[in-house]
Length: 413
Image (tube, rainbow, N blue to C red; front, side, top):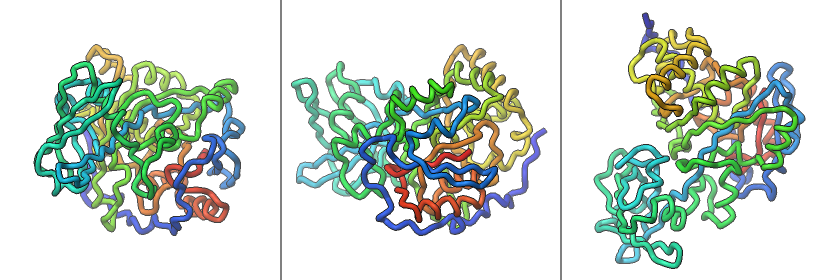
């Protein structure tokens, strides 16, 4: 029987002001370094509380063949559309996630003719009539009409229609849209961002923000890791704009976590079981969320809980029975679920919030960038570092590290 904690959950009383630090704008990287793997790398080992300064291309020196790395291979789409109405007013449409005729990003990008997306709209009051978008593709011009519905919680349902059946949504948005740089990078997207705000291993369209820990990797570095016997594997979490949503409440209990889509192959789950004796290092907070959500999904299947393919924000804190399930039980029940449903791909959604008190089941180490003050990502970092995050971030500020998406990296072991 599942035992639920009382509603006065101490986790919800965590004060966000305790996760603040001074970040001068001059320390926020507005551009990446010239070469991906030439960024700085801060290594922190919790056992001896030692900080080591290095460069990212030296990463293999700090790992052994008992580690294996898991990456997020989601691909950033050109989600920002700048359109002008008939009077010349600029309207910005920021595509967040598909709604119809499917909510599956992998399918939505292949569709032609008509799609509906959930979007944020800038200058929406000037959007009174359908907008016309003209996109040059292969020596012809594609004409797209955009219409929006009513505003719901700050977003709009926007329907795009076009007549060319041989042109997919992915093709024209890639040709017309701009790279969705984070709001703290105070400049317009440039041609170079098309390459640099994307990992070299990105495969599956769907993110509106890059899994930035992966931006430091090159093909050569990945090869060096493999040569040392360090295995690399991939999962998919499509990063939503909610990753930048500030925590505006005094305590984390008043913050609503955004939902993100995850895709994990049966082969990867089998490898997790096989590599249970190895130390898994997540490349990025998105991979951490994905893999810990995977455990929760399996635990919910094992316990027979409702909606196992949706991980809610607070259920792992309110239901201790989830943490009593073993990793082997969790993953085995997911494999059984996939077999029963005749599929080799787990498609699920997560709103999991990883707090300092969260009990991790799959992820042992983390490669990540430096994160914004008073953010849910900084709370996740403190799950690995405890209060030592203050020491790590103070060292970085005092030693010239660059912060946020285009900034330098950390390795926590």
